Image 1: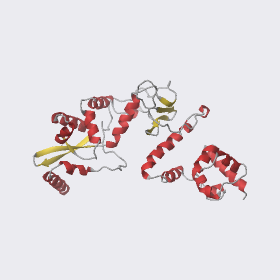
Image 2: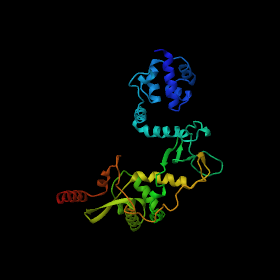
Image 3: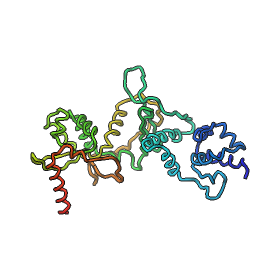
Image 4: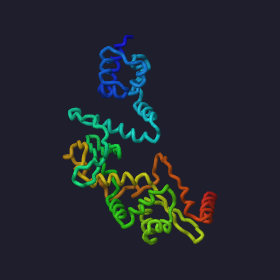
Length: 337
């Protein structure tokens, strides 16, 4: 087999992957001119072959045209690439990977270049307004909303369901109750306080003291948040009597909610905005006034639930007798079951 065959294979797989010579070269640490030389009869250094194969999503055997050189599943390629970074950095690099792929979702004639990451998500536009530099994309397949900058990055992808977006909305009254609750004095401050601590149980008296709020107000907010299933609670027996303790039900949802809300409240600050705004976003008549057999609010319906959720903070707020009584009650419950 001559060296030119390897170049032919590289050219073939590069084009199938939708990469330019410059992009492939950058991925493996050479120039686009070097890739061009390979494809015109040269051959890469043998030490580069694994990196080239990984970026093209094929095996090294495939570069030589050997049997068994089938394409590697893209999930394996991405997984191997992510594992090359420290665990703490992998989510950031996955976010960057999604953003680098955006132009492949657009019409070819648009010719969107590789925009890269911004240095800041809130550049000074001279108007005194603190807004995020958003990227919004609307295609025939769905929506994307993201911020991609060194100081803040997130990406949300929303493929349109077969029944449309609104078919999966909560009923309007559920949103009214939620937003009404969040607008009550002290509610956001309470949620901020709870999210600033490791996941644990809280009693109204302790939270009221820490927030310098009336205990009655805090108790009312905690109960209302439990009704919305933002919190859940257990009944405890303390030295002073029975008390109800609360914990966050789904803490990971709070940050996305506030980020998306902030994006919803601003306009005219887009790094890239592509899509057909003339077409309606929702299908008429699909936003229901009530659920069918589904619950109006939810918690605990997680298919996979991982994370550092330590409930040990309960022991820091309760006296010894309270801790022992709660443990005894749990043991009694197991025996009863």
